[in-house]
Length: 333
Image 1 (cartoon, rainbow, N blue to C red):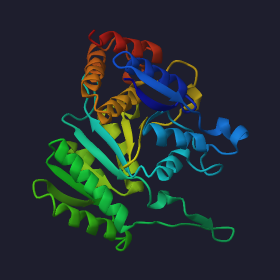
Image 2 (image 1 turned 60 degrees about the horizontal axis):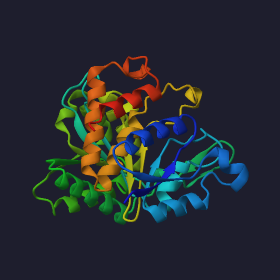
Image 3 (image 1 turned 30 degrees about the vertical axis):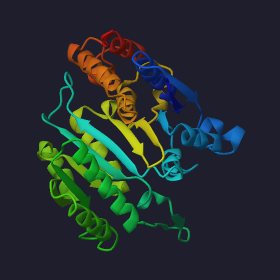
């Protein structure tokens, strides 16, 4: 029986890259896509960039594939991405970063996963003006959320046979908030004696990642640091165009590319579809469709290794549709 999956096309380049990803997924596995719209375009009709019916669809189907959604900078409505994660309690943001064949980078041997707490920290959105010339944002760190994300990271490491979890923090300065996050990670680590545990201050972590990323396995971080460090890790392996992501909770999961909506490229059949295709691979693994996920992954690696159907960011001249068609053609029948 076909899986029923909510599809949120997104805006900017979202619709064209999610279409490409859906074609790839449909070529290996029947999926019933329930398409729902969110973002700036639906505000005139619903008065809200995230209508209730979007949340209800994800709650019902329990799985969604999502394109990027534009977030206004410094003004306008709150991030739909953040709101979606908070409303559905998608507390674990998971962003793998590993070297892929055919993509030339400064680094070899990178194969790590960034696990980011996804519901609180400065991204809780609790902020206000202080008079005319100042503003204040509140950083929220709780024992419940910190313990939950640390346990998720250790369980993920154990399932995947990984050997080390590194908790990343700034507890030397933010002794109470980041101190609590670190305390919780240390307590959880005691229950996983088979996995090496270490902690590292976030600025030192960034330095170590550009010096010797092959030394790291699973990183677990509060929300803001996780967002920044996961983009850094994407840069180690080829950029945001090959960076998939997952937002996972106990009752639902939403899979999406790490990159933004790139509105200047919308409708130009130009943008690399691999980040959303690889997010689809994570989605299939989550659904238990390991064989289908493996077929797509091998096809992607073949296309990358052949280097004849690559988009501009990977040094080629292929368009979105051409590259996704090459992936489909590489899937064994």
